[in-house]
Length: 248
Image 1 (cartoon, rainbow, N blue to C red):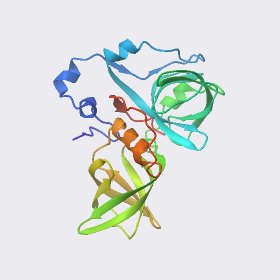
Image 2: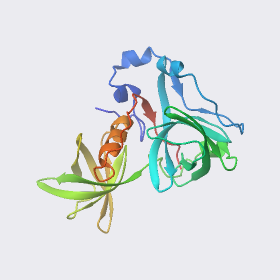
Image 3: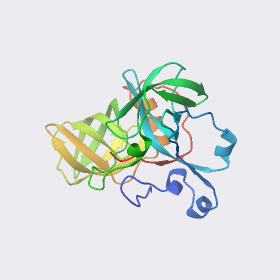
């Protein structure tokens, strides 16, 4: 089971299915930050093979499509990201690292599943990394989908339309009311049933938080196979451990 040592954080061992002893033997690479305006350069992929890679999750918007990504390097002028779908050099994008604050830019270069992004204007990296102690809790990137789930609460089972989903939970419009603050079991096609709690509701819309965070490769694979009304978009997931996005 994926553990949650604190809100929105998960252990690397849980994501990779390794025991803690093996993880402790590996050198760790995490997202790096720079105040320079240069677009991050390509990295040595062999280095990734020798390290446990722990990157922050972001989302990237291409037209009307939103995809999850891993932010490897971030500078004032751009970012180097790992992708789970194809991008072409020159495409306009928006990168969202802190929820609700998209950064417009374009694709400078691509190599395999990596891309260099150039921002339209320099960002304040220090401000991006700083969050007030009394501010909202960090939330994982959410992706709007066209898919359905089955929600069980007690002895009642209802079908539900999924409005958006993240590693930490989902928003649904069920066929009937759910009780807030009570537990549910969410069944998604292709994923083992997830235990969670109904956190809020607004009219017919309900927010459910999973008890255990979904691994990013699991979520990406599900999005590709089921997130667009069942129309698959093939792209192999990678075995990586994840940190959540920067707090808003």
